[in-house]
Amino acid sequence: MRINQTATRRKTLATDEYVGSLEQIFRDRFLARKQTYPLQCVAVEEPQKSAGSYTIVAFSASWYKDCAEQIPVLGHIAEANGLEVRIFGGIKKDPLSHTSKWRIPLSPPEVTTLRVDKLPTIIVFDVDGKEVGRIEERPKTMPTLEQEICEIVKSRQ
Figure 1: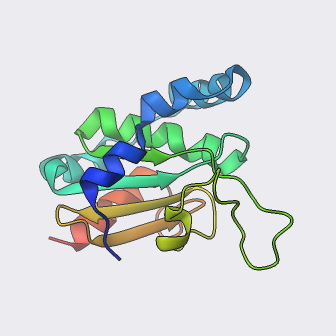
Figure 2: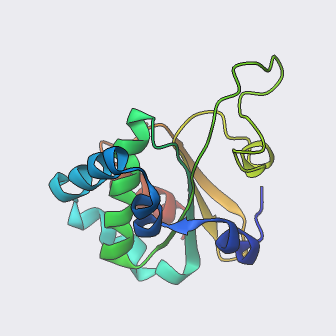
């Protein structure tokens, strides 16, 4: 799967912009997580070496607990190692549809083109816009999000 990175930047927000755009109750929850999360600095060193070579795109909904846990960590990672992190926010479920999980519009059409099934979906793209790794909901192979992103980046070198 590939993305057009210029178009994606126009349609998304940087992590801090995204969190700043949330309703106060959700913003407070996201900010509290970011302030209290102990970032594993060793795990951000590898991605830092190749920060310009990767972009992370995440799909988020302010109401979803796993998003409130993972998206603030992405903000930490972006600050610590310079990786570009972009957020598609405002994802909405479509309870009336029997064929589609997400309500479009409201949710961006990229939820379909990038096959987003769970939230948050965090996708790592290389400089050419090619998907090189994906994390759905929470890390599956490593204990922390930053460690899993580090492993994705290391596996591509």
